Length: 204
Image (tube, rainbow, N blue to C red; front, side, top):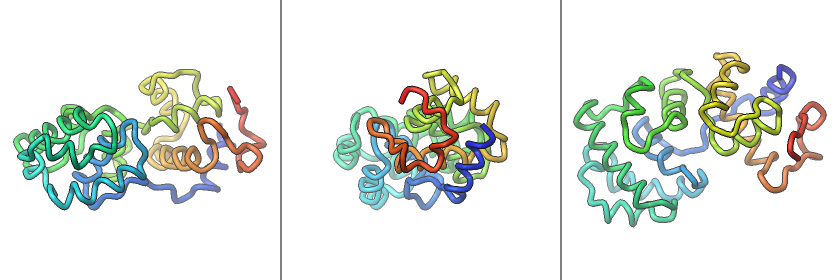
């Protein structure tokens, strides 16, 4: 594990969140939209969405039909639209239009699970409450032998017990970046991988 962590740091020392945002509200919305969707697609959708609805208050008042049109290409757009509008309403009414800084408060928002909460806390507030576990991290954590679990919550627990807390925020983004560039789902580029000599390649 230590060797793999060192190799990740060497190759992805400045790994950051790929979702484009200007504030915590935009990142929250973008992360909700990223479920079952690529970050690239989300980044193409959010400029128009935020231009029309730049604040929680404005999005809370948006017609669902209009939000659905704006986010349609991200998939599951009806449920996502309901989550965006409902969560924006909670932000406006309960949190004064501010994105909260605690896990429990973030989990009270519709469409927000630990993955989304960890992204917002880590990227916007520098709070390492947990490890972001998306589809890339699920795949890589198993291939690298960090866990045998398939459930994201159980995987996160395993990773939190292995990765030093000071690295939790960076680690997730490094794993996601590596998953996108090299350790792909269907065709991992093992011969080109900088971790090739030390990765157990479980399941490959």
